[in-house]
Length: 113
Image (cartoon, rainbow, N blue to C red; front, side):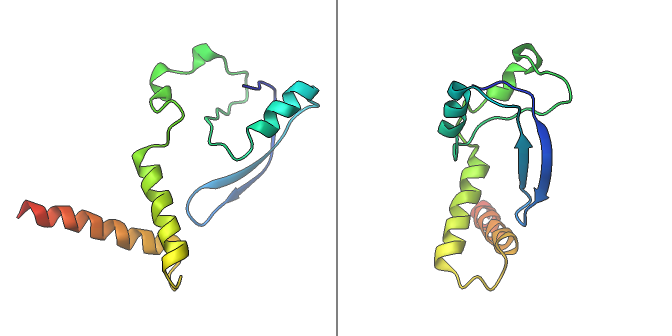
């Protein structure tokens, strides 16, 4: 884990409701820089506040998945791969995903009859 202050330089909203955040840090040590590069493209937990956050500030229940993605995150990612590789992309992903989610819900509702 790397702990350092940072400044949010840019926030961009994405089509799927997620955000891209650009954070500027102060100069890091070579060890911190190496660790930062090792964390690239790895899902991680982030906390943002205008004051220093300590481990005591983080409730225990936040660590529920211990690095694993939630089931809804995994389903969304699988649906994105299907949309990206198996469709003609005539609908934007979020619209297509909503249709697929409705189909999944209906499938289970049909089982109740």
